[in-house]
Length: 114
Figure 1: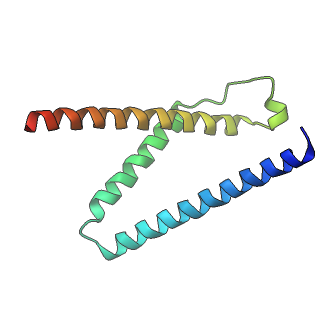
Figure 2 (figure 1 turned 90 degrees about the vertical axis):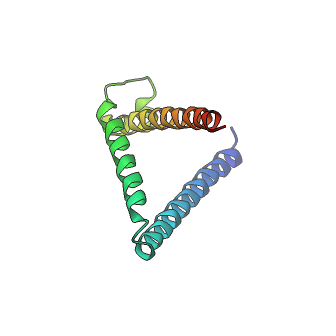
Figure 3 (figure 1 turned 45 degrees about the horizontal axis):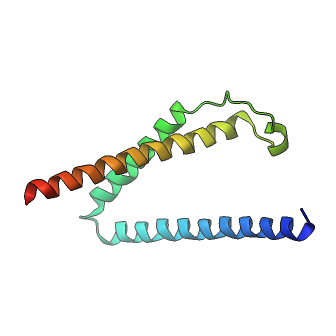
């Protein structure tokens, strides 16, 4: 690879991380604003945040740092970083299963209501 593609790719990754951070902070800020202005509706938001924390905790508990591969030294992967990757993958699977169950339940309930 030439030097231009390496540096251009790194800038793209850095810009992606910056945009992800701005989106996350904006989301959290707007949710906190909505939570402060609508106290009656805050129960659902707090339940959703609590369930997400529980799912992340479940992903952390099921994740393991025992995985090894040949490129660990190249990417400077530690046991804790591998466990975080496992947590992300497991959490993604759990949320995908929940979304699929919700979609099927919604379809079945819409058929029953007709």
